[in-house]
Length: 123
Image (cartoon, rainbow, N blue to C red; front, side, top):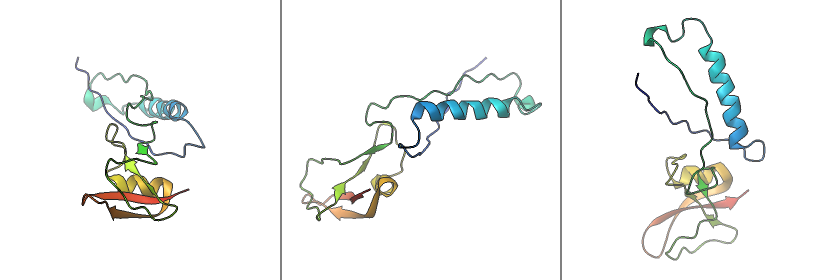
């Protein structure tokens, strides 16, 4: 028998639930789907372990670092923060996508070094 690991990224409202509670619900949904007769017959004998929430070493599990503090100078408009995606868990495809998940008026802004940073007004 071989073992394969799959990664599932879920975006959720942190004020509504926790990664652990969401993992329990997803595990329950998966177990319900797997109990459907014949659903895995074409794959032979398959067993699926529980879905668990893993801690991310780069963020709080949200996939976002905000407010971020880049090493370069970023001339922020009043009320704006630099927002970055977490490069460890890669929940979001880029910084701007991460910013749109938690902020309004999101856009790219050039820093003094010529790089681009996602900024927005945190909700």
